[in-house]
Length: 118
Image 1 (cartoon, helix red, strand yellow):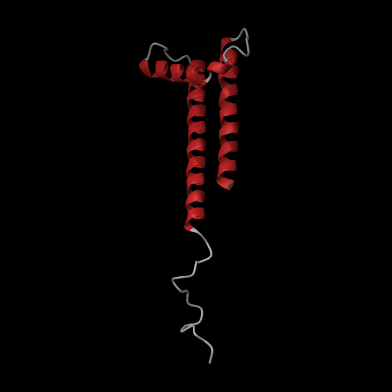
Image 2 (cartoon, one colour):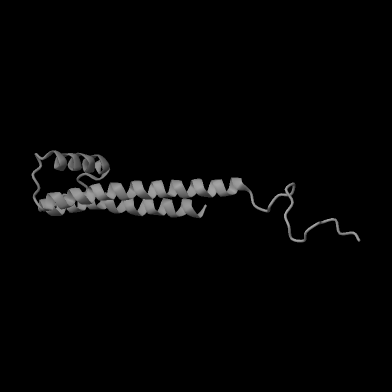
C-alpha cells in the first residue's frame, strides 16, 4: 500500500489551508473603512438637513442647539455658500445647504461602495 495519509480528507497542519488570513483582514479593514466613510457622509447630510428644517420652521437662532447646528452646517457647506441667490430666504437656504448634503451622500456612499467591493 502506498497510502501514507492516515485519514482521508483530513487537513494536515503543515499545509496551507487555501486562503490567507491577511486577505480576510484586508477585507475586514476595507469594510470598516467603508462603514466609517458611509457614516461620516450620513452625519454630514443629517446636520445640513437639520439646519434646513430648523430654518424653515423658524427656530430660535439664539438657542444654543440651533446655533450649534447652524455653525456645523455652515462649516460643512462653506464651499457652496451663495451658489444660489434667490429672493426667497427659505428657498435659498434649501438649495445652498441641500446641494452639499446631496453631494456628501452621493460621494460618501459611492466611495463606501467602492471600498467594500475591494
